[in-house]
Image (tube, rainbow, N blue to C red; front, side, top):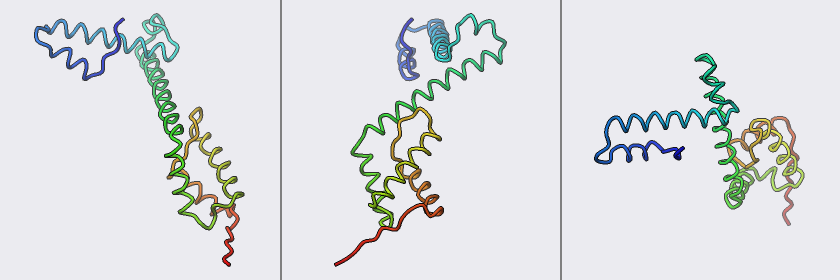
Length: 157
């Protein structure tokens, strides 16, 4: 089976001079069947199971495959974000500079990192952990409200 075409690629292919309406319709049907087959494979279903299922069962199979694709995209994007150490360091520095009363205390940093990792994994299972400023601020507010941090003491001479 041919590789899946994006909508732009299909539009380009179909607009070439000499293409008949019949050729375009056949190609569209082939691509829809390919997408269906890939969705079914992603959800662990076969074409026979799909064809034997009632209409709502077929839709559930397609949606399950779509969810697999969404999760794969989220994991890929999270991996790319987490791998960008410069950007992650910049986010962490920005966060710490916003809260000088609690950071750079080692104990507060360790506490925050542990709580963040736990909260991130609960909210995003199977996705690599990465620093996200809004999530960090939300957790920080909750920890401050719970009086979880030690105040940073800076002595000036």
